[in-house]
Amino acid sequence: MTNSTPPRSRQSPTADELRIWRGFIETAQALNGRLSSRLHEESALSPGDYAVLLALSEADGRRLRSSELADAVGWERSRLSHHIRRMEGRDLIRRDDCAVDYRGAEVVLTDHGAQAFRSASVPHLRAVRELFVDALTPEQLDQVEQFTAALRTRLDSPT
Amino acid sequence: MTNSTPPRSRQSPTADELRIWRGFIETAQALNGRLSSRLHEESALSPGDYAVLLALSEADGRRLRSSELADAVGWERSRLSHHIRRMEGRDLIRRDDCAVDYRGAEVVLTDHGAQAFRSASVPHLRAVRELFVDALTPEQLDQVEQFTAALRTRLDSPT
DNA sequence: CACATCTGATTGACGTGTCAATCATGTACC
DNA sequence: GGTACATGATTGACACGTCAATCAGATGTG
Image 1 (cartoon, rainbow over the protein chains, first blue to last red):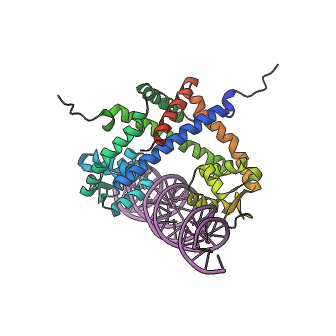
Image 2 (spheres, chains in turn purple, yellow, blue, cyan; image 1 turned 90 degrees about the horizontal axis):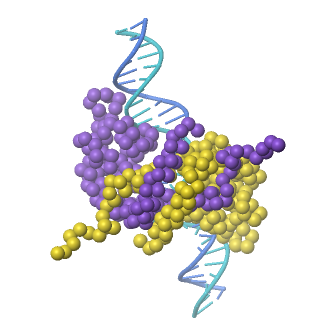
């Protein structure tokens, strides 16, 4: 007698599995959305702005080559280029030519940008605590770490 | 002797907590991104297209009032309106006037839209299994359900 | 009926994200 | 030195998302 059902791993998820999946992804998005709203209300910064300002704040001389900044925030170059242009218009950052490679550009945090980041940082981190850390038990936090690691292993393996 | 430190819940997260937070949110986004890419490669549908087609597929007569559709996918009206316009241009849906309320509009799944959804559905669900369900143990799936519930409770309580 | 008001839905402006094309400078090799 | 190619970065076109304004048709009240 042959086995006529395909291997379980090739089939669609069950209704329960799908419910958990949807809960996961919708919760993550809702959490993100709430934090973004707060950030915007309190500091007039988008999550993208915050990521760029954070990376520059931590950089030597508060400046980074464009490509290093792209790596730091995990964006594609063109996305960074568009975002940088908009941020420059709001005087959050400035673009300098790079002295050692005339193809390159350096992105520099302005004083205004540094100030904006400082003002945004504390309330943002407090919101992360309120909406994420404090909502979970220490055991649950451990579990989150475990399974995000598991998911990332799967994502990184060639599909 | 007075306690000079603020309550723990008002402080910023610790480095460990922040690492777990970042891992969580970045993993969720990476997972979403991967599924979106696959959906787009295999079916030329965006996640938004898929959500709309799914809701219409499950609706009586494969049609919904605009506002019901907005509720079903959890979007704001204007977002839906913009998306619907683009989808209409690709013949995935059609807009009809509503007979009982001349302000209203009905969104109807076209045959082509229904076909596109059917083709997209199976590979998409298989991807959810591969990248999410199969990456986790049954215990971890349970844990995910628990803590997403906890997070949502926090999100829903007035902040 | 006349008027104000509410409601369903669309629109316009603008910020955001992706992809492919482009441009200019650096580098290697003859 | 000159040609080919690689690399850093920008641009343009277009899809997507949010907000505020708008518009048309429904509804309530005198």
